Length: 111
Length: 113
Image (cartoon, rainbow over all chains, first blue to last red; front, side):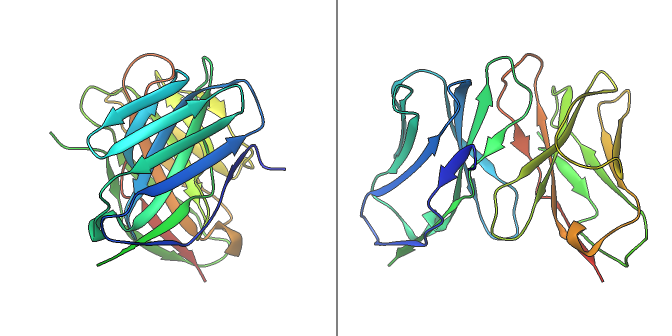
C-alpha cells in the first residue's frame, strides 16, 4: 500500500466549475501538506502549503486538511482552461526532510 | 529573481554510461533535494544535500550519488545507467529550516537507449 493515495483521473470539468481534488494518507506522522501544479514538460509549482487542520484560502484555491481522517483536499473555484494540468499532493513528516508525493491527478478544464 | 535552474534540459544516453546533472538553487536557499519522476507518476525522493553533505537518502541504489558545492549548487551523478533510469530528474531547493516548502526546477529529461 502506498503511503499517499491520489486518484489519477483524468478529471474533466467545464470552464467555471469547481475542481475538487483529494489525497489520503496512512501515516499520522505526516504533519505538513502541500499542493503542487505541474504542466506538461515543466517542474511542479507550489500552490499551497499548510500544516493545520482546517481550511486555507489563496485566491481561487482552498486547501483543506483533516488530520483525524488523514485526508487532504484542494478546491479550485471558477476553473479556467489554464488550470488544465496535473495536481500533486506532497507531505512532510514532522522534522522531516523529504517530500512524499501522491501519484498526481490530471485535470482538464474544457472551454 | 531566478528560480531553480537545471541543466541540461534533455539528455540521451545508452545503457552502462554515466551521467551528471546540475542544479542551481533559488537565491537564499541552502538545501537541495533531488527527485526522480517516472512518466505518469509522482516524484520519488532520491536524496537531500545540506552544508555540502547528504542529509537524507531515499530508496535508491549507490549508483546514484551527489554533491553540493559551497555556493549551494548541486550535482546528481548516475553510474552504470539502466533502461529503468529513464525519467524526469527534478531538483528542488528550500530555505534554511526544517519542513520548508520546496521549489522545483523544470527538470532534466533523461532517456536511456
